[in-house]
Image 1 (spheres, rainbow, N blue to C red):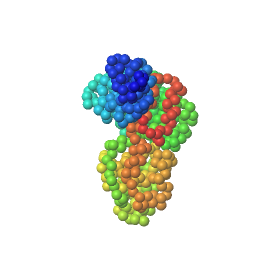
Image 2 (tube, one colour):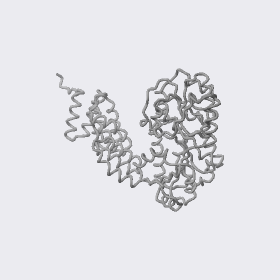
Image 3 (cartoon, rainbow, N blue to C red):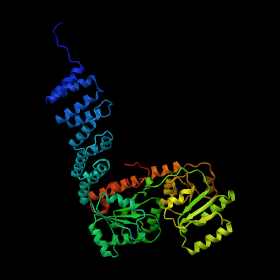
Image 4 (cartoon, rainbow, N blue to C red):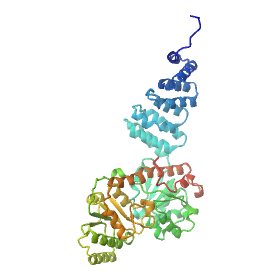
Length: 492
C-alpha cells in the first residue's frame, strides 16, 4: 500500500449522508448526497433525502426540483409525494400542492390537515374559489368528512352572495347550477311579486342572476345598480320584444346557451348590444350520469318530444313521416307532448287522414318520465325551425337514441353535420341506414356537453366577479372575453 487515501464508494457516500443528516449536519449531508447522485442519478431515496435537506437549508426552489425529480422514479419512497406537497405549501404554492391531493389519496397518504392548510393558504391569497374547491374535495375524499363541514360553512358565509330571479319560466335549466353554487356561495331565490322586493334582494346580493331575458331581467336592469348582474338567454326571448326593453348597459354579462343565430336575433332588437355588455356562450351541461344508457339495436320506433307548436315545425314532421311510410310502412312515430293549439290540432289531424298515417302516428301526451318513455324508442326526430341547444335531444342521445335533426339555423354549431337532414328524402336515410351506434351518441354528449365543464366555467365567472364586485360594465374581466365559446374546450 502506498498510503494514499481512497475515495469513498457511492454506497459509502450515501451511508455517510444519512448519518450526517441524522446528526443534524445538514450542509455536509447535502454535500455527500449530491456527490452520490452524480454517480447514481436514478436513486429515488437519495433524491428524496436531497429534497428534505434542501428544504431544511431554506433552498426551496432546489428542494422542489429535487422532490419533483424524485416522485416519478419507481424506487422513490412512498412519502416523497407527501413531502413534495408540503414543500409546495412552504414555498407558498398551494395550487401545486392541491394538484397532488388525488394522488396522495390513491397512495394512502391522505392528510386532512394538509388539505385544510392548502385551503387556508389559498384563502389567505384571496383565492376563495380555489379554497372552497379544496375543502369540498377534501370532504369528498376524506374518511372523516365531518372535519370539513365547519370550514366550508365559514368560508361560504364570507363569499359573494348570489340571488336568482327566474319568474314564470321557472328553474327547468337552473336546478343543477343552483345545487352546485349553493354548496359554494350563499344563495337566495326571488319569490316576491313587487319591484320593491326585487330591489331588496338585489341589494342583499353581490351577484344577481336573471334566468331568462324577460320581464324580471327588464325590471332588474332598471333598478339602481349595486351588484353584478348576469342575464342568461335561452332562445324564445330573442324572438320577442323583451331584449329591447332591458337596459343592457346595467348588465355585466349576457350568457347565451348556444347558437349564434339567437344572438343575431337579439342584435336586431338591440343594435350595438356587444358594446353595451359582455357576452359569453356557455352551453347547458348534460348530467350524463343521471341518464340510464341502453344498448339499443335498430328498430322502427321514432320519438318526437315537444308540444305541437309552430317553432317545432310539426307540419314538416308529417311530410317526413309520409315519405318514410311510402318506403317502409312499418315505422311508427310516437309524440310526447301536449297540443293546446286548436289550429295546429285541426291541421295535424286533417293531414294525418289525408296522408294515410292514422296507424303510424301515436299521441302519448305529456311525459313526466321521458327516459322511461324513450326506453323502446330507436330514433328521435327533430324538425324545429330553431333551437338554442336542444336539451331534450342531447338527453335522448345520452340514453343511446339516434337523432335525426332538421338543418335549422345554427344546428351545425350544436350537433355538427352528421346528424342533420334538409329534405324528407334525407330524413329517411339515417333511419333506413344499417349504421346504428348508441355508444357513439352518448359519447358525443359526454365529450361536448358535460355538466362538469359548464359548472366549472360558471364558477370561474362568478369567482372573477367576486374578486371585483360591482365594477363598471366596461371593466368586466378579460376572462369573459376568453369565454366567448367554450364548447370545444377540455374540462378543467
